[in-house]
Image 1 (tube, one colour):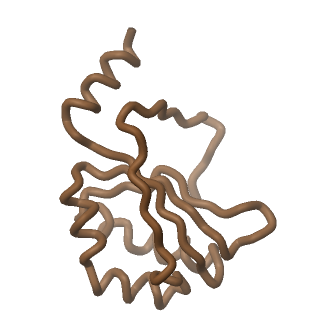
Image 2 (cartoon, one colour):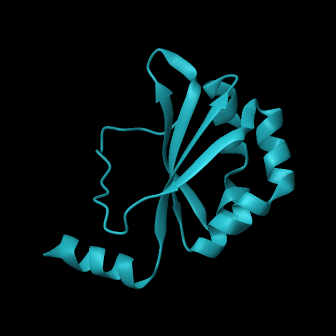
Length: 116
């Protein structure tokens, strides 16, 4: 019952999740940049839910990002200075692809997972 209420609230507020994929020189370097620029992403209404790579390839990354609105996603895409910061951290911003995900997701986080 609780999940149903949370899902309905989510849909009414027009929040969204996106999948971002891109090439990078090193995920560790990208992650350091992301941790140091969390405030900048939050300025656009974005929060990284998960970011990672395939186990054997740390140059092909993806992230699931929650945005408060489509306007936040648009402002992120238009932030040239942030794109330069990401590129300096080894992100191949020209390879970035953004996919808007369904508006009725199941989101949970195991208590055993710790962020860096």
